[in-house]
Length: 196
Image 1 (cartoon, rainbow, N blue to C red):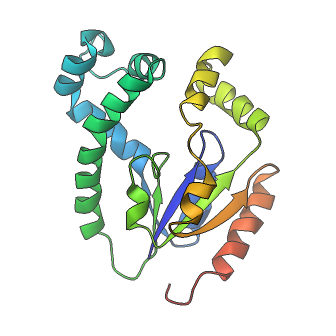
Image 2 (cartoon, rainbow, N blue to C red):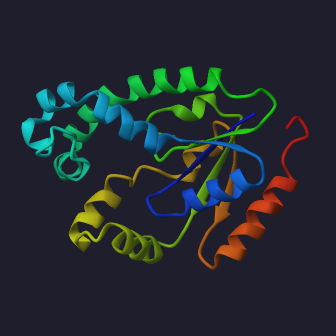
Image 3 (cartoon, one colour):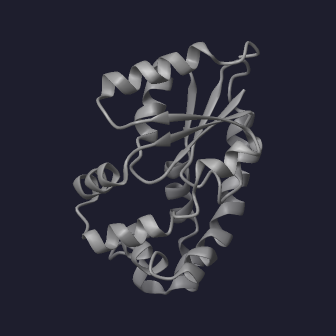
């Protein structure tokens, strides 16, 4: 069974993934996979977006790249068109190595846009209030409110309704404490279909 884990920025997907991992699920962090791919594609990316996206050691500076693509939807699409096919290939290779019989979680911010949901039997949509997500993003990234709002706007098309008509979708609301979230995830696990 493959379970997609989605939600908007700073909704708590990583917390849910951590809880599922503690419960014996195999978790694939698609964001980390994408970060590795960005580095592997640095020549292609510097050609597409300019050498200014590389740091003084020649590595991709994700903040600089983010500043470029999150300010222009066409440039964001250009990055996605370069990255997503490679990410699909990498995921295919990775899934072949996963031990059969263990539920696998795809923790992917781009589950919708990259159409990674097509590989999933179930999707968990993690939802949190906007003010809480902004607070978490500011605390984590130390970026300006304007930058965070631009990033959040780039995700405005991400909605749980997208998945509801395509694959079994469960919504987990994350707005209180870690223990409340843990209880919600454990309750969800108890209601998983028996083929798990």
